[in-house]
Amino acid sequence: MENNIWIQIKVTCELKYRDTVCNIMSVVDPGLMIEDYSDIETGLNTVYGELIDETILNADKNIVSVSIYISGDRPLGENISFLKERFAANNVEASIETLGLNENEWASSWKQYYKPINIGERIVVCPPWEKCELPKNGILVEMDPGMAFGTGSHETTRLVMRLLEKHLHGGEHLLDIGTGSGILAICASKLGAQRCSSYDIDPVAVRVAKDNIASNRVTNVSCDVSDLLSNVTLEYGKYNFVTANIVSEIIIRMAPDLPKYIDDNAILIVSGIVDSKQEITVTALEEVGFVPFDELHENEWCAVALQYKKP
Image (cartoon, rainbow, N blue to C red; front, top):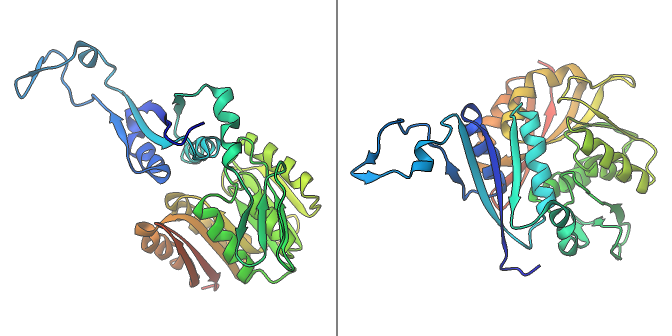
């Protein structure tokens, strides 16, 4: 695939989901093309004296389409999976289509661009079809994301992994919410966490994560289906480390329930946050007892590390 090829990702939904869909899609690319004819009155044939196309007049005013265009050298499969996961987490019913490639092509086309990635001082994320060299005391995270979000190529994932390397010291009981490909839980295990429990709302992501857990030969990582915290268990007691690489709106919605699952002084790393929403996200967490103590930024993204202090 040549770098000058552009692929349209088109999401179609009911009008009531428009703003949520736009917010989520703008995370992938801010250049949105919105097809929304809800404010055009049936029967009118002029707007500022111009004729309206008959197909627009006859369009279903309750249906909206939002499109973005991404370069052919970006990981299409990962972006599609990101959208599916975020739509599911927000209870958005939407269809996704790609124009320019058929499904079989986009499911594998990103592989030629997915190369080993060095993150922080020790972590190397490597697809199984590539060879890589580890730094001294380095850890290898072998990752085949399949149809799930999380290869280490996105800023939000890298930011969390850098904070994990910095603040996870060994022996932790970690909870990973919205695990995607399982990359963060696997990384935490290899950095020394004693037990990692990961969850995702998407059964496909859970299946992919379990495959990646097996291929990395980490026996202390589990993965199950859960809508955020709804099915999270405390079989081994409360957690003292939590990662959540999800969008700001979901972090804010989940914040009041988090203290039920964690010990005092537990560390929480959140990401998937655009810089403009850092303040409202952190404020929501502070209101339930979390104290921020570290943050990292890359491009327009940020990740924040906080510690829970029981009120």
